[in-house]
Image 1 (cartoon, rainbow, N blue to C red):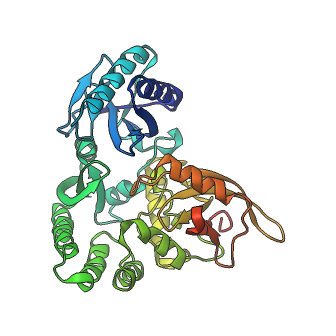
Image 2 (cartoon, rainbow, N blue to C red):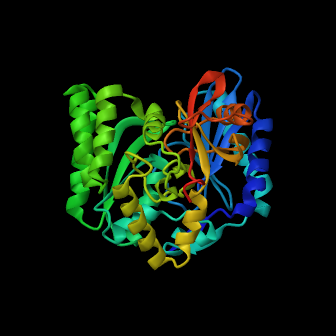
Length: 392
């Protein structure tokens, strides 16, 4: 099965196309965009603060979304945000016109479903899918928007995996969110979806935090997470009720160690580089490390050379703030370690705006981390430095 992807060489063309569209649509500016292998997610913004999401796909992609769409010879343009005003329609028309103007230089790349997950080609190997295929993890859970669901489901079926999905009742950016469960065993898929439904009910108030905390342990086991890590997550819910945006920072701070194991680096999931997706109870957790090692071995067996590629990518220092903005940092090591440079890092769970990421990068350079990696984010926001490079 062949898949269409966007080569890295088109990054400049994508930015040029989207910038031209924003300039042609009165009142709009290009806020941020991301290339997600097979499509582009672009966010435009008005002076009032209103944002609007548009996606660019291959014209033959089966997109499971209901928003307005248009096609050119090489691109499908899809409105993810609701189209309610003349300004929205003008923006879509500008994107369509820019696509027609720029698509003569646009060439899609094609790869097989198997090859797509080869990290040696910078195609963002999904290690957890390989863990499920190898039987190391009983199931995989991923949150998707409607525009992403059909393509992901098709790829999972092409790999011979059972799957199912359920609406979460929450919003992912401007679109409806779904939870997709994937496993070799259809019964495991049913178990994950049943837990997701129970968790949705608990979040709406039935049973309160105690019910959510108990479900976190049960859910962790269904996904193959170490009991100690699932228990730590459960206790955070019971004690802090942090919510999805603050949870990653609280978990990372609690798991801090001076020399964290690189294979437990779960803070780079926005680049699809993680071996694990759960929050380890400690970045020195033996059970989590054993699972990460087994996943690395499974990926290596299918894609020789990938283990070293993952290790290189994960052995980097990362800063995460209390509002879930993240950055890679380079450290000047000496008597006192300081931050020499910083690069924004996207998150798949909570799309940080380009302005938020730029603000984080601007305040990090020159800071000296505290005894447990404490640094300050924008406006004094708490942040933590995890030095996975030191643990390599």
